[in-house]
Amino acid sequence: MAEAKTTGGDPRRARTRAKIIAAAFNLFGAKEGVLVRIEDIAALAGVTRMTFYNHFASMAALREAVCFELTHDFLTSVTQTLATLDDPSERISTAVRMYLGRAVSDAAWARSILNLSSDGLPFGAETFREAEQTMREGIAAGVFQDVESALGRDLVLGTTLAAIATILRGQTGPEHAERVAAAILRGLGVEPEIARRTAFAPLQSSNLT
Image (cartoon, rainbow, N blue to C red; front, side, top):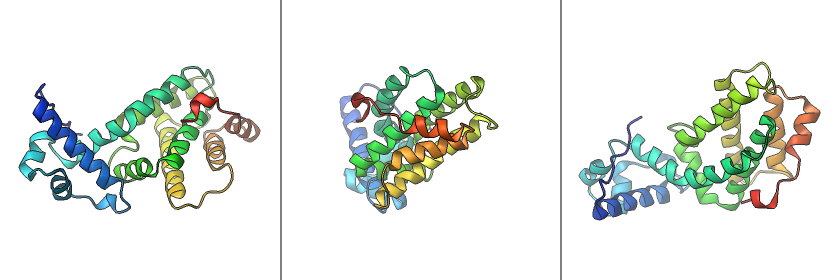
């Protein structure tokens, strides 16, 4: 994937880049955000198409930059939480519940994630890599059965994205995040009772945001 061009330490260039990213976030966060064009972003940011390309090589590069802005700090928080858990199934369950909790509390964030993931790596490159690494660790530990790391990664990320879409439609039932997490764990080969117990275990209050 093409990388966004750097600002080279120029404050004015950095401000322009930030304006483009902010405009993209606003547009991707709308219900019709999946249809956003470069022209739409440039117009909202108040820049020309040429200026856009001075900062981003392509729409794909912009999407990845926006994904990074949307997910990096949150992923850091999630990763810090997961580092306190030894069991890979607990890490997967906790991550899923934290992402779905964020979707419930921040619809614009959730819609942006959904729209950006429709034409790129689900949740962006950072989260994509972290999910597969957790899968590898779980497979190596014998916690996840009869699944390859890439397939398990897709199961986790794809199911979580679908659950976010359900949240945005307002069609969730009681304990939606826990039920989704339990279903994912069962799909990864975890025994049903263990999957349910893990997915419904209380989250620490510091992990709910």
